[in-house]
Image: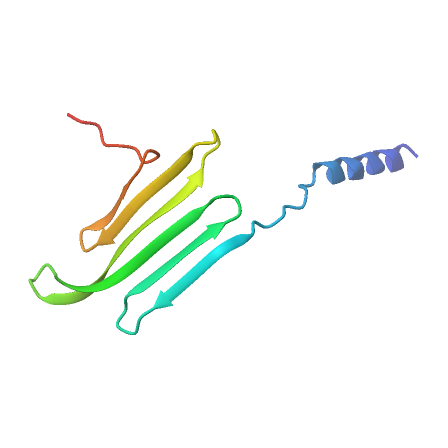
Length: 112
């Protein structure tokens, strides 16, 4: 009898601890446009305020041996509301030099 009560209590504890169903966030806007030459644009906005915009443009760059090759230069931004209720926006670009981002939530290198 005691073991049945312990099992029942354990099942109740598991049921109470189980996460509640989370409602998926609604997408308010979404677009994507891919060009045959490689350029593209895309973006979206969700019901909870998250936004993202990005475009990519094909260009020619020189490699380490000074030979031309094609790269896609990406520029964009995303925004969200942080835990304190502040709107955070990050702008970024990526090209043959790497990925570069800036915004209030991005740590800044220490100045010497």
